[in-house]
Length: 463
Ligand SMILES: Cc1cc2nc3c(=O)[nH]c(=O)nc-3n(C[C@H](O)[C@H](O)[C@H](O)COP(=O)(O)OP(=O)(O)OC[C@H]3O[C@@H](n4cnc5c(N)ncnc54)[C@H](O)[C@@H]3O)c2cc1C
Image (cartoon, rainbow, N blue to C red; front, side, top):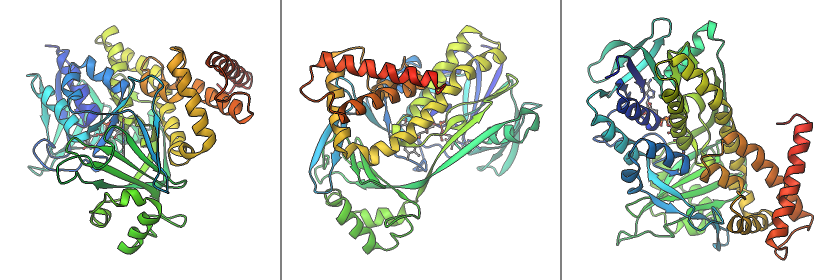
């Protein structure tokens, strides 16, 4: 057993994974969670019931030795099933390579698996209803309030990790420590979200296509649906808080809600017997991007996951990126074992630019999902792009780089992916390529044009 004592604040997705890996390495781990144990209490995590889980997350959970258990609760989603307002649909695969897909997974079940595996280790203890109020960074002491016993306690640890999500108490304590010169930004979207549902049919079956992520893109708002193992779908409405013809503020009666769905999402409405109940009972969540720096303080504390970089959910990467944080951190823990100052500074050097990039990519994808996916030019480009992925191993769409290529850092995916998208759209719009262009010719033209754009960006110092 290693002598150093590690405190982890927050037993959500990233905290549970980090705790499991550190305990497996022999550290004594004290994992604290403000909420009740979600494995025995029916509590909503306060946000999405299910999540899109993909390659970066899969890699992290493989390294933790839990992937078989996790894959057994996944539902593959092979592409987007787009629902038009006239109730027609079209399928847009996530990749031109048939075997590539993302997965729908229950947040609670996944978190439960990670906690169960972590608790099997004798050198790890999880304490629930223990809320961190602040951290004294100079003394490395965290102050907690225990909601079960209504008492306060404090813990001194050698290393303190903040995996306590977007409202991180450790991050707030770092912000208040003037000498750190802590930079922090939080950008809210004008859209919020509300969770609704399609129940399973009377026979317990799925009421619509199971192996797809369903999208109803409507320009300034959209609906999405992801499948659950019990045959239901979790449906999320993204809508402005209080702007435009339709907003959470303006949909202030059951009749208005029903009419909005009848007009905008008629096929979805047929699968939503509980629409009004769900709409009235479920809260409106806010969506924002958090960036901050530094992530660490004097080799003693480190922010991981949403605590360091909350992102909007439109690339399905927040959790995957948080899991990838743990993968990258362990690269340096294995290399510089015991030298936490070096580990944290090398980690941050690598990770900060990638975390910022996924934050930006997620905001960009917000426009793509709610609007462009239904646009003819975009559809044409996407079809040609799938042909290239099918034919050439070295071609990856931006979506594939982000989702299916864990060896491509997010910062590279945004740079190359955006140049490639621009090149592709220009070539299609100018009629230089179309469905009659040979794949070889298409590949060469896209490659050449992408290179030109990247060279221009370099000259203009945009990269
Ligand atoms: C609507 C929505 C949809 C999403 N969809 C996806 C998706 O499809 N794919 C994807 O990859 N990501 C998705 N995400 C993002 C994903 O949910 C987060 O990135 C992920 O949960 C981050 O994990 P985390 O462990 O860092 O933080 P969290 O999951 O927020 O966990 C933090 C934990 O710390 C606890 N805690 C908080 N404060 C304290 C405290 N003071 N003391 C002790 N404990 C504390 C909390 O109770 C919680 O258990 C989505 C997010 C939203 C909002």
